[in-house]
Amino acid sequence: MPNPKRRHSKRRSSTRRAHDHLKSPASSNCPNCHEAKQPHRVCPHCGYYKGKAVKDVRS
Image (tube, rainbow, N blue to C red; front, side):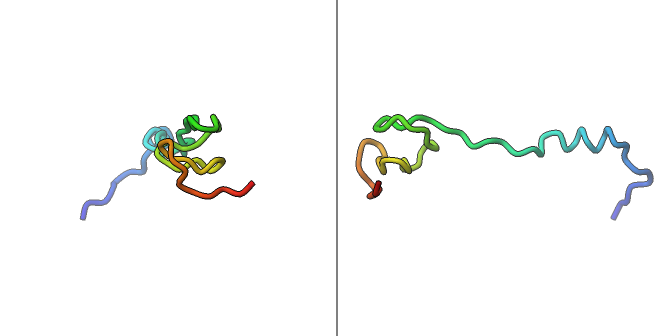
């Protein structure tokens, strides 16, 4: 199994890790209550998905 002969510089390591940061989840607006929600998920505020009441949400 090959092993590195020299250590990698700080710049080379940090350049490799440039894409490892966390990304914020995508959001869209619910067509029923116009609150922010994740796409392709039931709205946590009103319980609707694709125009149908799927989940009972108590206020």
